Length: 173
Image 1 (spheres, rainbow, N blue to C red):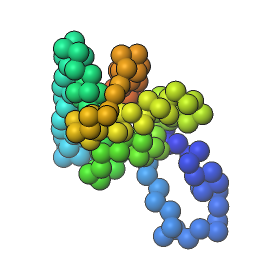
Image 2 (image 1 turned 60 degrees about the vertical axis):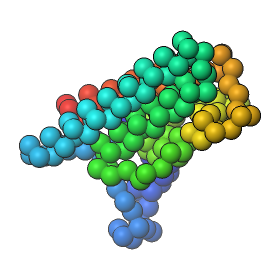
Image 3 (image 1 turned 135 degrees about the vertical axis):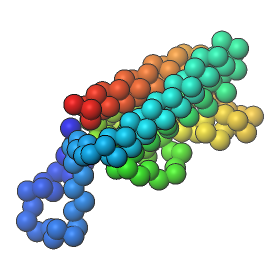
Image 4 (image 1 turned 45 degrees about the horizontal axis):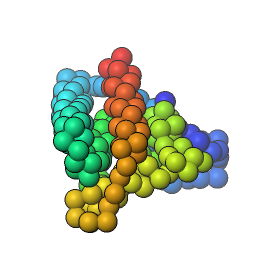
């Protein structure tokens, strides 16, 4: 479902010229075998990467290497969100900021808005930790994540994966 809350009144407005509006479909229409094959490859590639990084996070968590675990969670979330965007847009910018990817993907899947709630300070702290993990978890000696934060992030990344599966099921129908 297209999230129109980001663009209230956009589609009802006759003050905008057609050149100003980029209207992405709420669900990409799979036309022909080439388009279907491209979608299947994009999903399979993104799903495999996101699941591999998620498994890596579990491994590092068991080894009590929390910084590497949260970096792996970052990568898992990044690839899952990029897969959602790639399925709808066929192109994704090479960016590593989870907050930006989450906001962009929420345009196409409103479920994503509930994972890190803007009004919840704890959620925003977790999102900030996840975002900073891309560099700081690997290179900053001052980066610290607690076990409970890692556990909550793991659950949130699982929700992103569930959303990716829901998106894929919707596209295939």
